[in-house]
Length: 216
Image (cartoon, rainbow, N blue to C red; front, side, top):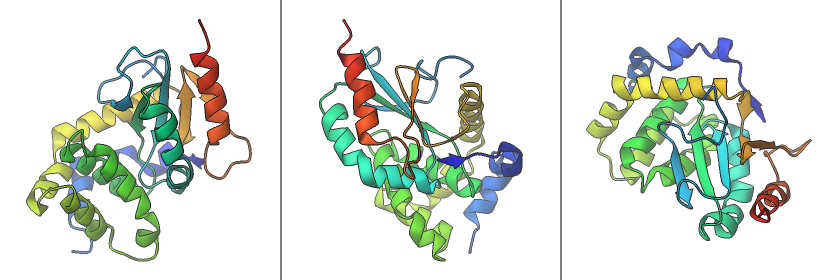
């Protein structure tokens, strides 16, 4: 799990229009975790489903990327595509925070139908960026692939209203007690796999989900 040092991240630096403008020029819930929240991005069953799985994650979190690579296809096939659960993804920026914030902004601008494709594409590009690829070039390439022009991407990552909404989502995650990524809740109960280097195992998630589905 990637631990989040909120003080070190400097939320102001990560969550202000100035930070996003800098990103553009690179290289030139105090409630239950499962309760519906403003800005939720979801797949699978409709709101009010018997089982809700909430994932708090970041596009720049290597553990989140590992979970995505190892478990997403099986999880989606078993529970999302079958509408057995409502899967909710909630954004938390992890270092480098400006890259994460910009990535999420691009995903949202791409539209709900392409949001998860963009998020997953950025996660899959982490190693490329860590190997020296220019983060701006990678993000713009992903955005272009989702049908956004460069000017639309520039507008997305410098939009102050969207930035404010992102900050509110960040605060809600903090109030929900989330301290690292990825963090998963199944009907408000946190699911963990001790010693795992890629978040909760599919086995542990399935066990928690099936137990909730079996309830009368």
